[in-house]
Length: 97
Image 1 (tube, rainbow, N blue to C red):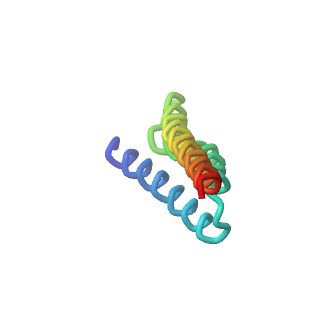
Image 2 (spheres, helix red, strand yellow):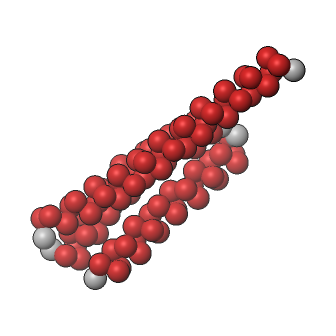
C-alpha cells in the first residue's frame, strides 16, 4: 500500500515539474514557472490527501497530502532561488558588458 502512495507522490511531483517546464517554454518566464509549482503544491496536496483518505480510510491519511504539498513547496522554493540567481547573473552581465 505504501508503495502505491509513494508512486502517486512521484507522479504528482514529476507532473508538476513538467507542467512548469511547459509553462516556461510558453511564457519564457522562470518566475511564473516557479509560481505554477507553488500553486500545484496546494492542488496536488489536496488531491493526494483525498486519494490517501479513500485508500487508507484513516483520518491521519490527510498528512500524506501535506507531505506531497511539502515536497512541492520545497521544489517551488528551489525554482524561485534559481530564477533569482538567473536574474542577478543577467543584471551583472549587462553592467559589465
